[in-house]
Length: 419
Ligand SMILES: Nc1nc2c(c(=O)[nH]1)N[C@H]1C(S)=C(S)[C@@H](COP(=O)(O)O)O[C@H]1N2
Ligand SMILES: [Mo]
Image (tube, rainbow, N blue to C red):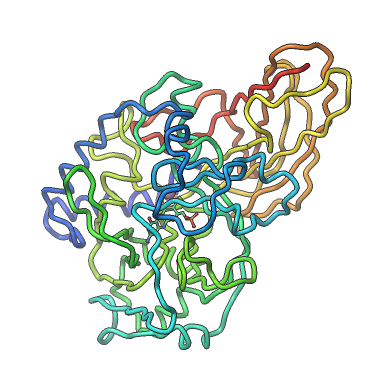
C-alpha cells in the first residue's frame, strides 16, 4: 500500500499542527528553509530523459567506492542503479557487488574501532548513552531478509509512459535490492539507553557530509521514525549477506526499516535523537511526501510503506528468436503485504497468464518468478508483468502523479524485439 495507515496519517497531521503552533521542532534546520522546501516541492521540474545521465556519466561517481561495471550498474549522478538483467541467475538475495547505491553525497570512510553511536534527547529517562561497535555486537542479535528500495524507484516511467513531469533521479526499476541483514533490534538499543514513556519520535542521523540543495544546507541525512515503528521491526544492521556491512551500504552500522521507503534506512548512523516532541526535517516535510493536484499544499503524510512493483530480468529492447521457447524471469515485491500472484502478458495486455512463483512470498521481501514464451511473429513487442499482493492490491495501468515522482506502481511496458 502506498498510503500510510490512518493512525500514521493522523499522527502526522498532529505533528504538522503542533509545528505550526510552535510545538513541534524543526530538527537542525531553519524553519524558513523548511517552509521554502515545502513550497518548492509542489512544483515539478522536468526530468532528464532516463538514458541521458547514464550516457553522460560513463565514469563512476567519485562518491561510490565499489566497482560499478557498466553491465551491472547504470550510474545516475551520485547514485548507481542495478540493471535488472544483471539479477538474472542471482538468488533471492542481491549480492553486495550488485546492490544499488543511493548516496545524497558520498560514501564516508569510518573506522569501526573509532565509531560511536550516541543515543540522546529529552525522550530518554537519563542523559546520553554511547555504544561502541563492540558493545553493539555484544547485544542479542537478529537476522532478517528485507529489501531496501528508493521511494523514487520507477520514477522515469511517469515521464516515459505517462508523459508527466517529475523531479529527481531518473531511476528505471533497479533502485532496489534484497539482502539478509544481521544486527541488533533498534528497540534493544533504545531500551538499553533508557527510552521513556514521553518519547514520540526517534531520529537517526548519518555521518556522511551535510547535504546542500539549491544553496540551502539541509544538514546531515536524517529522518524521524514514529516511536511505534522504531520499537517494532527496525534493525541496526552491521552485516549484509553474512559479511560486515560494505562501505557504500552504511559501514559500520545502518538502519533497516522493513517495507518502508529507502530513505528511512539511514546509513552510517552516528547518533539517534529520542524526542518527546514531534520532529520535522527536510526528509519528512518537503521531501518524501506527495505533492501536486489532489494533495494538500503541505503535502501528504510522510511516506512510509513502499508500493507494489514488478520487473523483468531483461535489458530494455532485448531480442528473442521467433518460434523458440524462452524462459522469461523477473521479480515482484510490495511494501504493503506479501505478493500473492504475478501475471505476465506477451501481447501488450490482451491475454494474461500466471507466472510461476519461485519463492515463498514474505512481507518485506520479493519473489522471483518465471514464465515460458514462444514468440510467433517477428518485430517489436512489449512484455508486461503485474503483481497482486495479499492486501488485494494489483498494479494499475497508470500510477497517481506526484511532483517528485514517488511510489510509481503502474505496470511497466518492457520493449523487446522478436527476430
Ligand atoms: N546517511 C545516509 N543514509 C541514507 C542515504 C544517504 O544518502 N545518507 N540515502 C538513503 C536513500 S534515499 C536510500 S534509497 C537508501 C539506499 O541504500 P543503499 O545505498 O544501501 O542501496 O539509503 C538511505 N540512507
Ligand atoms: Mo531513496
